[in-house]
Amino acid sequence: MRPYATLRATMASSFGMCRLHMRGRGSLAKCFQKIDTCLQRKVGTNVVAAQVEAPGKEKTEEKEGRPSFFAVQAERQEQAERSVLISCQSKTNEKKFLKYLSRHGDIKKCFFYESYGVYAVVEFANQESVASLHEATAIPRVNDESTVPFKSRLLSLKSLGPADPTNSKAGQPCQPQTTIPLKELIQRLSREESIDQQITCLTEAYQLTEENIRLRFLVCSLLKDIAAAYFPECTIRPFGSSVNGFGKLGCDLDMFLDLDGISGRNIKMPKAGLSLEYQMKRANSERAVTQSILSVIGECVDHFGPGCVGVQKILNARCPLVRFAHQPSGFQCDLTANNRVAMKSTELLYLYGGLDRRVRALVFAVRCWARAHGITSNIPGAWITNFSLTVMVLFFLQRRSPPIIPTLEHLRDLAGPADKCVIEGNDCTFVSDFGRIQLQDNTETLEQLLHEFFEFYGTFAFNRMSINIRKGKEQNKLEVAPLHIQNPFEPMLNVSKNVNGTQLDRFVALCQENSWLLQESETRAPRGDSGGNTPAPWGLATLLLPSQIAGIRGRKKRKREPASARIKSLLESLKTTNHQKKS
Ligand code: GTP
Ligand code: MG
Image (cartoon, rainbow, N blue to C red; front, side, top):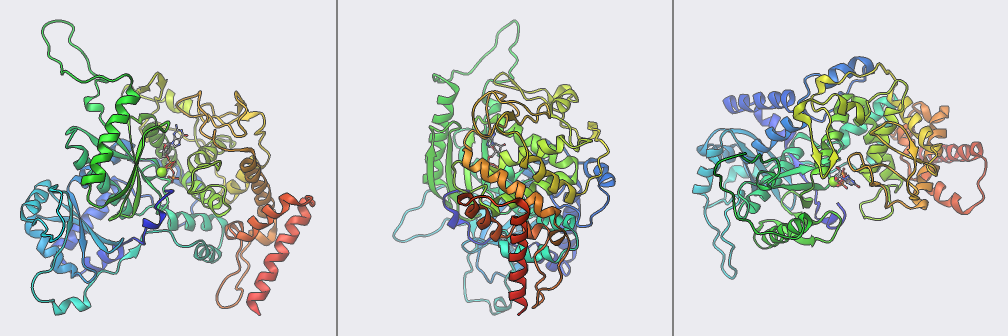
């Protein structure tokens, strides 16, 4: 995220449209349907069940049969390799378009979205189709400029000859792929009947869609084609919220250039006899190698990468990276290399998120609440990051009685030989198979958990204690940072080192405020129609209202009134707003 936010133009996919068109498309439709069902079963979508069932029952169903992080990654990567991204005209006739492309082979999936024009993601059944398509694709003719002769899988559809009159009715109803505005979310939430349903509704509105995830893998795959000019064995993998299950539509695309296959790590040397090894250039440190690789790839992306703009090489950061905007997808991209710990954190978050549906739902609610109140920000600074906030939610869930999720130490104890992983001397081992994890019988509702989360952090001894999900227990702080969250895999590091006292105070004050609000009967129950079919904000919707933020900010300067008085005035202000709306 952060810079180039403007490049995130509205993106849309035609998920609905795909289904719409599937109806009349015989064998192609059946093929799509088969693939959709198969994907939902095998890869698993992020979709949380809309119905609110007893948490105990879901708990088992949630994780059983869920594929491991690597299985999902491998399948999605393979899909992406068989896919192309095509810029289309806004009135492209989908039927003709698919017929034209199917000359090169069966199409498994196609969807449209909008980002500076309409784009289609087309997934072929076989990779040979992509080669065939490349054969048939022309080199653009430009008059005053020259082109870089690099044949990527980002193509443009051109319509030759006279305009097709049937096109006027055609076109794809692209659906936006960015999140709905907060105001609209508040209205939607207010229509729900319970706080649990509100949290589920928020998760569904904000989470990445199946199409958006596919597009993220495709962008990694397109980038890999560029990096492969230097490192044919490389892979570019997404990490962070794009794949850990906690991503919100519009989040950045964190990528990792994986050169492990040629890094010399994990290589067993023969004990006797002759052997050959490559002569390789040497550098002073692994960091220096990472910096020079990223520098070269960054130049390549800048000069040869179609659709990649605003390339910045940020090589002196703790974790060197190349940042750019990928215009055709609208993603803000961060490319790193040799960042295996972050990949491991991503896998850990994916695991935790898949254990129980309440984990992702609570993280989405807390992240959205934090964003609405300016506790987190797109701009780097002293704010709490989404990653830190997620770890705080996980820690809270470990502290429930009985715990909803196990500690990282327990996950390490359950690991099999294939899970063993040590990175730079740090033990990053934990179980990857969901089936081996037994959960305890906690039946708390999302409403209770949200309330308890605010209560927990509203009264947490941040001045003395550190948050540690490895042990699932708070520990004495080893450094003076206002907020200390131990890095799960690098115990000496604090993931929230950047957070200052003011930001932590705001977070604590808001937690206290929201804990009180959730105790108030006026906040806890639906409040009926406020006129014009707009239900009055209640429950989670109340907690997202900006008026609460103003209250907190304003109060910092004034002498604090008793909590009960403040809550009363907040509720009074809500009532007044509703009354004004009615009249
Ligand atoms: P958003 O991009 O805000 O949606 O969330 P994100 O989880 O993707 O966070 P971000 O892009 O800042 O970082 C990407 C990933 O890098 C995270 O998911 C973590 O796996 C990892 N990461 C980020 N910050 C830290 C940190 O301070 N320490 C460690 N060990 N890993 C981090
Ligand atoms: Mg990210």
